[in-house]
Length: 128
Image (tube, rainbow, N blue to C red; front, side, top):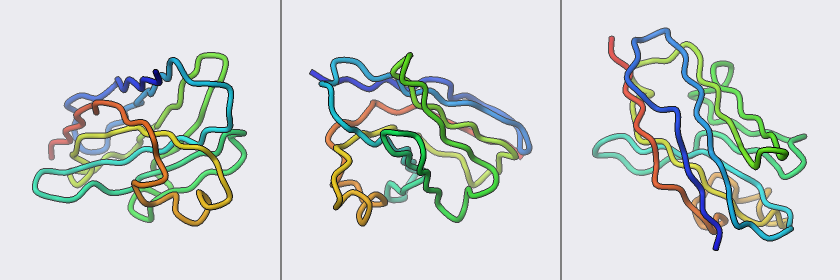
């Protein structure tokens, strides 16, 4: 059974940095892409960033482009989200998710339905 576990959230001030980690376990040998989503209070969950199985292709929401960096270390079964220059509007619960990297994934990676497995989330709070 595949499990994803996020960590690294916390309370920081605007302008600070955080690095989130997503560790996967129990995943069969297959091409899985991994994404980060976030959900702020009272809002729908939204796409933040995604990385392909190879790590060669990365996608970002416009709101985080230039500030966040996604990366993966397959020796540790871990995907990271480095978040710099945090803003109060980045406050949310951050979730990692993974799904098979099919041709369709490249068209729908911003949506939730391509992703099979989800973590429990980690809270990020940015104060002004």
